[in-house]
Image (cartoon, rainbow, N blue to C red):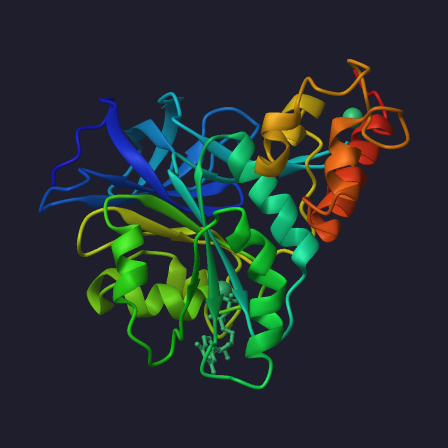
Length: 305
Ligand SMILES: Nc1nc2c(ncn2[C@@H]2O[C@H](COP(=O)(O)OP(=O)(O)O)[C@@H](O)[C@H]2O)c(=O)[nH]1
Ligand SMILES: [Mg+2]
Ligand SMILES: [Zn+2]
């Protein structure tokens, strides 16, 4: 592809490396090109998956000029900082594993973010070939299955991934979860060798490391794409309002508006529909506990603005 300087070109951020972005120009064409781009302003406001307009500044470099409006933005936040994770995804695949054990609070928080944004959530229990703790994994996931969240059991290393592939086709999926769960192994199994090897910086930045340090986009052979992301151990939801937190828990949707007090914190208030449902056994206790933690975090958040 011949690049015309001073002309802006539409592209997609397929790798986000701090303040450097790998942008693919000519998506879906035979002669797509990769440019290493920096943002025009001081702040890096972009995420892997973003569509942008860039101005080439060399044969393999460019400057991001504008952001094309996003269909979705998946991010986490505490009171002080926002961390963009991926843009324009339609589905978040939360990867957990039989071994090492996974943090179910992180899973609940992540699903809350997914649901409150009306994205599709898919839970994948990986390493099902390791059967010693398989039942423990299944037990932890049972409350999610009961709520209708799809849970797929896979083995990324040698298993048949056709069912998972079926869920990914045509979607832009973010693979998300703690490190060591098998996200990168799954990516390698799902993405063709040739695609996984493209990229001008991935080899340099990830060289000699087995840990994913940056989010990266991969086309899927059957259409759609997969974004592999670094593992994380905490997921702050400071950006969600109380209504959004409530909406993030499907079991509470039909109960909203049924508490006696309009500003009910679902904690100790009399005639709380949420607590009544909980004491009747209709609500999973672990999910209720994390829900209350989230509301308490929301209440106690320092007001910075
Ligand atoms: N037995 C088994 N090991 C797996 C499976 N998937 C991944 N692993 C191993 O788990 C470790 C972490 O995998 P990795 O893909 O780097 O996890 P990530 O941090 O989530 O990207 C590696 O040693 C993998 O070989 C699986 O399905 N079964
Ligand atoms: Mg990884
Ligand atoms: Zn209530």
